[in-house]
Length: 382
Image (cartoon, rainbow, N blue to C red; front, side):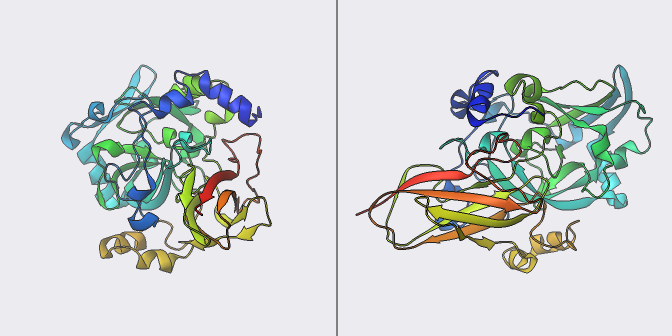
């Protein structure tokens, strides 16, 4: 796989249809400030799907008011193999499959690829919730999917496109790819991609197609999709496997120069790895010795106690209910206590470790696989 350093990666971003700085200010992507996560910067384990709390991102850079507005009764999923239509699925048929015993729920941290730690921009394009729907395989079981198909090309009603490997649909030992119609026990809202979107546990947000209206089976192995062939053209890992990088976000500082009242402060953040569980987060101040951060939400009982009764019930029914915590593909909140800071400028460095033995460094080669360690400047008031 081609390896990219930080400078090459940023140059690659700029060769697409919008440079990172330009995208930051378009209506298709928003900055979600720390205060929207919870009172006093306290990041709840479950992100409400409310607008302005759960982040908004459009792969085609459309404004919120221009997002597809599809009534559930009008939703159709066309399943094709080239020019041949294999089936059409309605919303009611999908819900009926769920009622017949195919429904499942699982935790998923949804993260935009533009939330990579590239300075003060877009650091909060990440959210976590309980998605409910039907495995895509339950829909496909009765269809004659061409055996030579190697990719599923996915299409959204907004014109956005992407793809996933056919082999991922039936991959052993992984949570299934889902046609999701609920988030946190509520119907999937318009801005979250409703009435039905694709959810893939370990993959970046752009692979989790919103307003899904067509899937197409193809034997063509070439890269396909807006991000895969335009925005991130030439970055091999953007196409397949498309897994979220090991990364962490300093929610309290949100990647910005901040002035805080010392000498003792607490910094909070979240860490996630696409195909692994977070095992540790370490921090240092002014390149001093590393210390372990406290991991919050790495215990199922702790998470359960923070939820409403309805969400507690949903959590009990989730596919990961018997798994050890912390969970793969699901964020862990962390807290770092910085003590005895003198007035003036400081730098916080934070890096996460996962169950595959990977660790964030200041230069990790390919930030789509392992994001660079977070370095955040801040000030302590005199």
